[in-house]
Image (cartoon, rainbow, N blue to C red; front, side, top):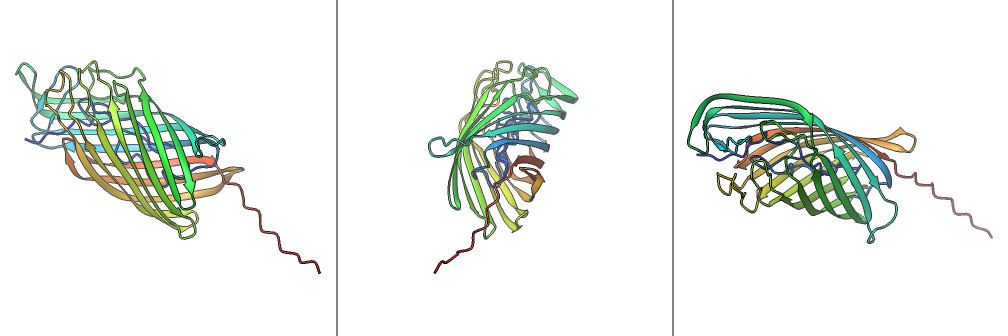
Length: 342
């Protein structure tokens, strides 16, 4: 029997760094479902420093997934048990984030802080036979659909640049919003606090237009007291590669690898360790608007991911549409002609 973690228990979590604007994206929840980290959250130019000042980003995120026959998961609201047939869910979220990038060096690097929040809609459907903790079975269809708010998410980054090479360390987490409801299948709030930290590297050659970024991190989640369930420690890698065909247009590919390293635990973890894994890949395209307004530039990025292989997680796809506004880089003054005096 296939084991699949439930995707719809809490469908929104942290948001990773957006290309060019250094602005984060979104993630998911693990207690009876997915991890706090949403695979694919970091993308192109993730470790590249930004222009100091205030930046803003809005991200539309659509997630769609399903678990087939024999899918098992931990059901919220005390109905922990096994699902024999059928699991579908989707989520649509509109993430709003604001970032401040400091002009003062910190440990020789550039520091930035981001705060995010998101309203959204999540829907979950289960057509199955449920076996409860006392052995009772209930057949039928259970659905839930909810429009609500996610937690508040924060992220701090520190970046260094040496020509075409860029390095980064980051830490991110959530502040529970209070909108989590253990009696609902559909939540955007996680129901627990989590923290994620890691490091990344970006190679970017503006002259050739070649770019590659990779970010790896670990997630630790506190216990969900309502479900008496604590997620294991998660490891994730996000990568992106692109070619700038012009100074304002890029095209490329994105991907991720996610692996839970330690078992889920607590009285609610009736399915045992339940370690999840997924690998995904997809295309991306980006457009830069260098003269959006006086002193500011815009960036539009569209990307999508398809799960190629999953274990203890539903299989699905996601699409991301990101628009970011950030300070434009200062114009380079033209070189003065050399004047020789004889």
